[in-house]
Image 1 (tube, protein in one colour):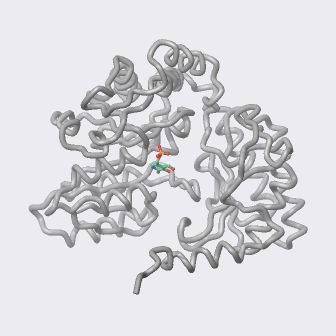
Image 2 (image 1 turned 180 degrees about the vertical axis):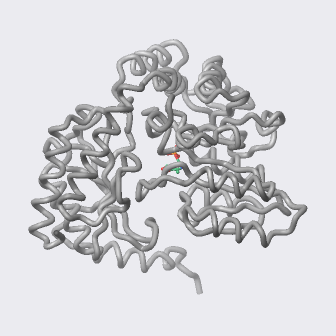
Length: 399
Ligand SMILES: Cc1ncc(COP(=O)(O)O)c(C=O)c1O
């Protein structure tokens, strides 16, 4: 008897089919035209984008777009090779130099995505007898990295230095230990208490990685992230980042001061066995990274927008993922997944796009309408988003 390999997905197919028929499919939205960082045409209508990761609005930065166009003209559309063969151009090195300058580190290594950066760094650093200790709410790329490697995996309670200490205390003494946390968590938008987490890690001789995917560009004095904002940069061993959020394009990276860091270029499979980023992406990423170093005013506007959205929704009585605006992400928690889907759909029909996220992709089994703001949103756009939430929230008895 042959087994249909798709049978195991039946529960997921059933769940998808149970989504309210009159709702749009939240996982199949198409952007018909993107008019700016904050407005797109969806289903033929102008829609405010309040669910992207385009925090600093770099996707339409003129200088970054010009750099990308020039790179296509001069170097073509792709490298057709890995970084360790024919896929390293001058511009890849210049991008790594820009990252070293941005973070003030000795080393930087660029990957083709942030997902691959986590996969590569984590699975390569932690070997068979080592231990990886991760926050329970870690991003999928961190979980997948753990599966790819051969180390022992231990989870600790989200953002709890106390639980981290308990777990570390139980480990054997003479083993390699790698603690992994994020600066800002992508679903609820909450910030990690890095000084406590770093202090505990150091006490037990563990190295620490901070994934700053959702904090680059606007956290800390020069936008290096939560480690900078909370004054613990010198004790963080590796920072992982992505170009797919504040940098406005695609790609990932790791920066570090470890003296042996560069050996990773010879042993890290997700770096070695995939094609490098195309020249256009590298050129726009380099331009944006350099700009983000001096983007203080824009970061201030982003924080103003973040606080305005959070306050507007909180004052209206919505249940939110955080008490105050800890990041540009504000998650609205909805009790039932059916109401959540309706709500999301009504928002879209009213010209507001946010992300909908359901378990198991969310922490604590929450149904979320994940909103995220951009430095390019106007105060009027933020007020429109809040007003639309209030109108639908009342109609659906959520507030
Ligand atoms: C915390 C975190 N790390 C890594 C990634 C992966 O980034 P990329 O989109 O560059 O693959 C994401 C993306 O959502 C993320 O949220």
